[in-house]
Length: 153
Image 1: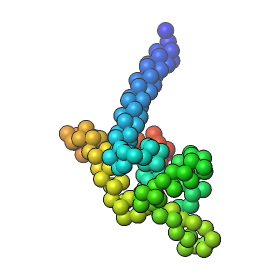
Image 2: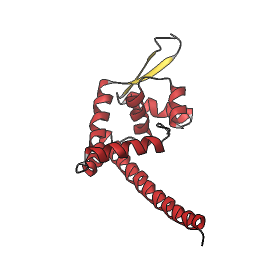
Image 3: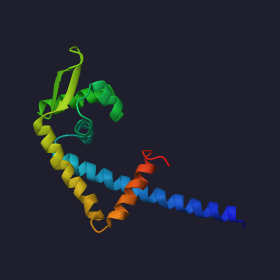
Image 4: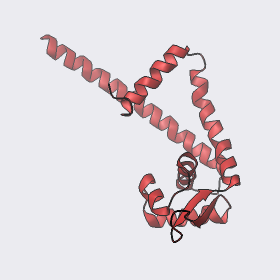
């Protein structure tokens, strides 16, 4: 066995281990999202929570942009927004830039409920980091930024 073959096998094992850890993170995050969605409003589907979470993170937007950004079809977004609007979590207003357009945004109640729901979700991950040194946390953040394509070398 030459050095290249050994490195390839070793690299392949590392990539498999990385895949396992990413899968564990995605699974844990999904489970926490479902719990946070139930905390936000147990009568809603998690997809509605995804819309609320997006509006909280990025602010007011059109239904078309929301559908594209959340990878949902427009009819699903429309149905979910109507439900969120009827519950008092989302409001529709005329666009300040184009009086014909409609902008969706969270109500004060929607914002407060999403903040409460996300605090619980975040606390689980923050607890796992509580005994990390600042340098370890900094390095982890930088590696994630690089992995996610935000911090090219």
